Length: 359
Image (cartoon, rainbow, N blue to C red; front, side, top):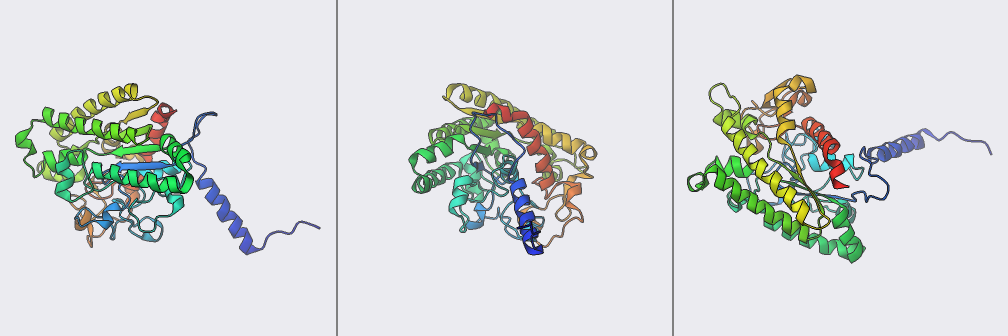
């Protein structure tokens, strides 16, 4: 019997299957004998909140247009971005999946549980006051959700595989920016009670407790995102950058000061927590390089976001504010959060620079 070329319908089915297999193949390869991460989990703030805040009574929400305008169908999911965010992009680069859902997503499936979820909450921080002020899910509650997740996972795959999933997976932590911007430099009494040295000590101590508890729940590969150059975010240029909207050096210096303490802390924890890979990820310099040299990366605008005027709009202020014509030309999506294209550049740089430390 001779070969029959598939019908047009089946031809497109085959093409789509090939595309799906290609998209899940991933660019990152682990050497033989080293466990490939089966899942990606995220904890922290709006950089890695995939929609958990949709379920909260909080102003820190992004489940309405124009958020998500570059996602399939332009449907807002609660991600604080025009498209996908770091958990999604990391999972794709690792060949796991293209979208990491929120743990509180009512449509969560068993397969989602097997390949990773985000417990993060927009506007959360290591300082308990930060989460409380924004009605966000605290870092402590995020760990409580992780405990509940582990029980669900055990019921699906058994205790042994559940433990293996926890230890082999990549756990991404991104928090601390809101502590500085919204709490210390914002509307709070913290600045009157602490100088910057003692406040960064408070954040570092809280981060240490969080990492130790996360380790105690079975996480071994922990990627801790440092604080970005917050003084150069469009909103902070507007609020604290003067008439010319320059980067605020005080805010940037505070971020660097905290990053230095966090880096030393995480190096120490990696040495003292058996079989752990606790890695500090520098986000400050990669983002600052893009902001200062946007043309090198193919951007045109780095001091304003794409949403509205771009100088102050974020979350509810973006609703009905209009957007720029071409998101790909903007480093920032709104006045606070980078665009998907910026995230892609940074995630690829991060994985190239740090992936060997998780082996």
